Image (cartoon, rainbow, N blue to C red):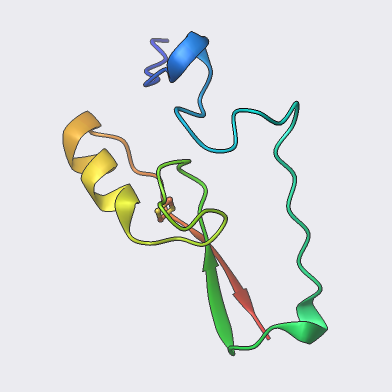
Length: 74
Ligand code: FES
């Protein structure tokens, strides 16, 4: 089985987000969500990470990938 991945700098999946951190971790307290539906990025290309900004669509078109956000409902 062939595995296709677009490697970021240094061979990881994260190309540019908060590279100064040893591990990128975000916490969401669901009771405090401001909106009834919030989309969180899972493609590591969002300019508003950890929130999805739609950048996954460009990534998917360029690579044939099929990644999308995690939707959290209040
Ligand atoms: Fe990354 Fe939407 S921008 S999942």
